[in-house]
Image 1 (cartoon, one colour):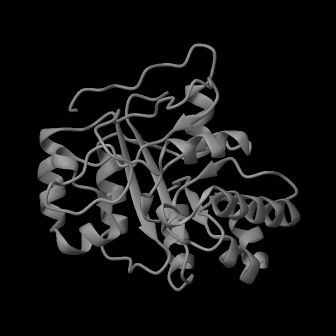
Image 2 (image 1 turned 30 degrees about the vertical axis):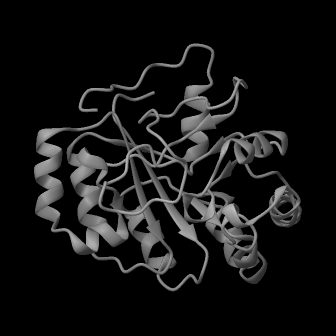
Length: 243
């Protein structure tokens, strides 16, 4: 695994208003990314999804985008089964990655994902700003990809942020000045960090933050690439300085 990795992803759940422009920016800067797409979006835009899959990994963001803390075991299983069936119909293969709606996931959900053949989850936010309400996985967890279950093949790719848990996410990049991120990266360059976007977010600061990360020598990898690096027989270790 490279010494400094950025996992770029886009959650595609409501509409695809700005997705084409986001992907054009990724392509311009040679950024491999993972699109976490709901089953409803896949059903509505199956033709476009095939085009997206030519350059980007398509992963699961559930079928309906209902929050998993409101679903029982059977409802969760149906969300995955319906998505997998549609995904196989479109792409003739199974999905490898998953991100829970609103990052709400628990141990039972992780085990269900493994049972359904997923190879990684990217729902857990390992550190979160104390002034921001977080409904997801509780507690402090590793800030780099790790194995959350006994399975040697199932990986958690956390949505890790900067110092104090400040995320590299569209909503935050719209509210906080880019100069603040430049200052943070001058102080600390975590070995692993996640850049997350939504398909309807505006493009403000996206290209600038990508340029900043590249200037700091980050290598962009999608979820499948990170999984393949980490589950190899002798995976190189990520740098952990700055955590």
